[in-house]
Length: 143
Image 1 (cartoon, one colour):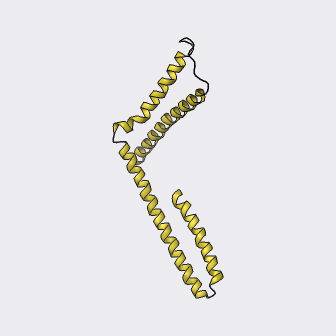
Image 2 (cartoon, rainbow, N blue to C red):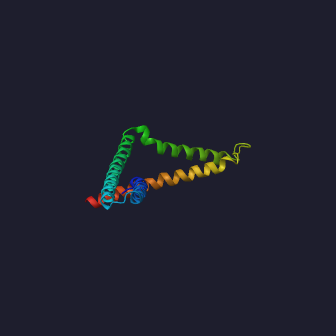
Image 3 (cartoon, rainbow, N blue to C red):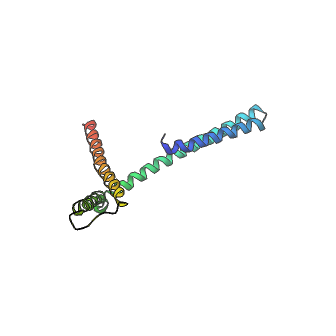
């Protein structure tokens, strides 16, 4: 069961328990209680089944979107182009600072550049490493 189903089914299960407790207090006939509890359980099972189906559909749609994103050059190049852009800007700032007159970067921007550069380096090389590891693992398990 994935996270989406877990979130919603936990809430539904609590609701069913609450309704069941209310039924116990209002209905005194054991036979009626049993019938109502069975109907509530059927509703809960149907809800969980629907949530699992929706969750699978959700995951499939994400996969379709990722596949679609990789079909076009512009979407494939976003990550490397932005990475190169940040590296170029950082290099220009680093090389120009102190070498071109009184050029300096406002101190408010320094943490932004540091965070952006660190995040992109980790994300770019880290995600590529994970992608290659997964591809290597899949190739090893198929062969």
